[in-house]
Amino acid sequence: MRSFLYNSIDVVINTKKLCKSYTNGEVQQHVIKNMDIQLFNRDFTVFMGPSGSGKSTLLHMLSGMDRA
Image (tube, helix red, strand yellow):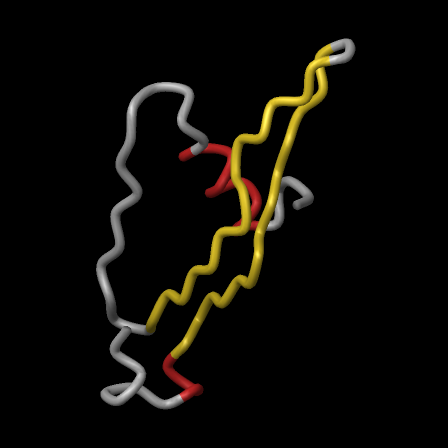
């Protein structure tokens, strides 16, 4: 964590315990569990992972297009 280099005004996105799950019948699939994120102004951030790992879901949630 680089909090010693940045002050709170430099944080542009901050999440605490972000969760998302889908239910298919009786099976609940947790896509994102208790994710804490801080994205800072002027940083370049990349979300990487295999297909189906929740990258697009996370971006939709961070953009406000989907609810947590």
